Length: 143
Image 1 (tube, rainbow, N blue to C red):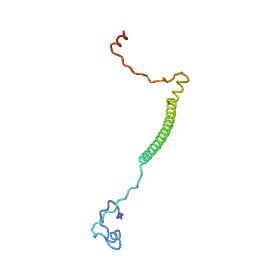
Image 2 (cartoon, helix red, strand yellow):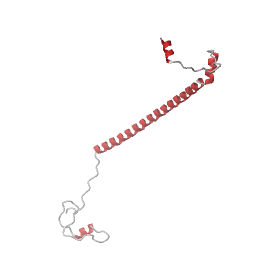
Image 3 (cartoon, rainbow, N blue to C red):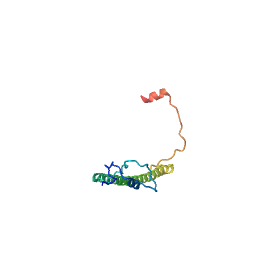
Image 4 (cartoon, one colour):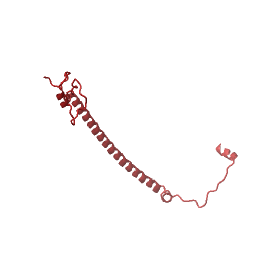
């Protein structure tokens, strides 16, 4: 006799087998029919394809490589930014030193002292007098 669960089984089954098959809590959930209900299909074994597994591993490894490459790139950029900030700080300090030197050398006391000692310049005893020249006299001097 063939198994009652087979896929090709459309023949009537004895009531005791049918009831035994669907008994749950002592009651038959479906009314009895003259043909046995179709049995559950056999679930095929869940075989994993090697190509699918290789593709999955390749994808995961590619994501890991991209993540590590991104981390390395970010670390390089951070180092470069820090170096540029240090270089900027050094240049800003050098500029401040140069500005202080300019302010020191352009002080009026230093210029006046140097003018009198090195160049032997003296201040005039009186203020200069402004005078005006006529245009006619100016033409005489130009010719």
